Length: 330
Image (cartoon, rainbow, N blue to C red; front, side, top):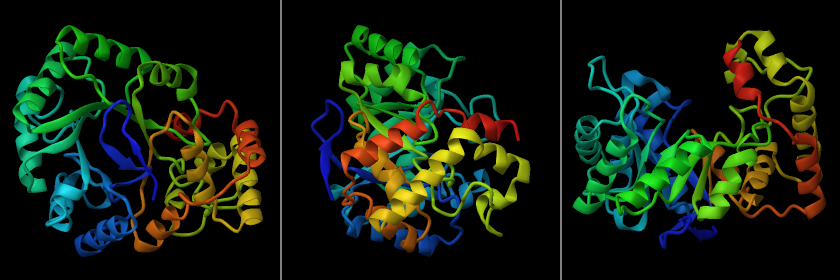
């Protein structure tokens, strides 16, 4: 496993992180085994949130933190844990958002579930336009000063919002955020327009989630063929699947299949390796739900791809940023 500095911070993390969304896992024991398999494979970064739970079902919100806390008992000082706040945790008027009230309440709940005294990287899960950003960032700084949080970050922000957050932190004399966490893959390259130049300029880290594009780059799917029965995309209308793999997106998936076969790798490994090859990306988040998927994803770190193959993937996927939008129109 390769370890790198997280943005401008001194802490070092594995190039691959395990995400605890647990979209395809409903067994807590199996989830604990998955975490330990990742740890044994060299992963030291575990990405969680206060709303994550089995089956990525909000009915189980908080369960992922509990599972992670149990699995890493006795290993806490050897790992880096993230968690997040802002998403809705209940129906009440203060059960969501970035208010001082909500963040201070939720961080203590997360600490109890994780069975730890600190969260290494605490992220605002989304941009909350209803709460002054200064209030949100001042609260995060309070948590750093109290020792409950080590570093801060943001998720799903636009480039201008990240820039504004950095400016506010500077005015507050608060440590700057060390990472963003956004969607990025061969089928979603929107960040390259404005976010990547900003990251390079300020030395901010990048956690890429959904590097397999909602499973489209898992190797299970091919353009012109129906999704396998029981697969995630088989649950969607056929027209949504066809739309997702239309045009350049389909050409990208086909090219990934061809190159993966040439290198004796899987499509998932190839897609992950391409994401990790981008200099702006610090970490790719694996959404593995099983030991087998975790083993496959770990193989991406050591996969060697010649420059011409990376360039081919660059060309065929250029301008791809619409898969998520196609999903929303289904």
